[in-house]
Amino acid sequence: MAQTKNLCAQIPLDLHAQVYAAKESTGLTTSEYITQLLIEYYKMKENGGNSTMEKTRTLAFQISEELFQRIKAHLERETARTGKKLTQREFILGLVERALEEAEG
Image 1 (cartoon, rainbow, N blue to C red):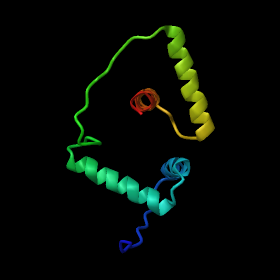
Image 2: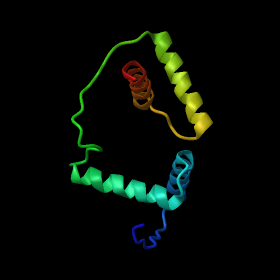
Image 3: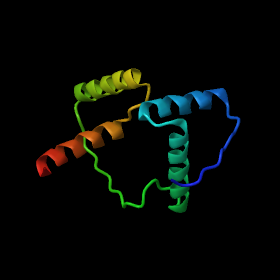
Image 4: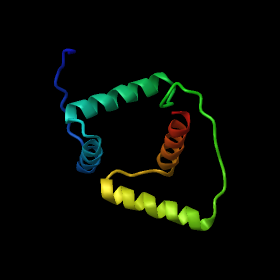
């Protein structure tokens, strides 16, 4: 195991609540979660502000208003249930990745 050192910082209460809620949804300890955040942050800085080194492409399509509202309601329910904001991007990418894994598996 890598050697460790304590890092302590005073942060605003609203930011603390946000970090704590996000940490809780991951199942990680506070140390593990903050370490992960810091590693991701510095990797992103090294990559010119991009979160990954992967080249990304845009996939855009239109859907009906009814389907859009159903998705929006689902995202709100999941956010309320988990305490972590589920974005449209995360939701759609998760669906696509699961479908591809099933098709390729």
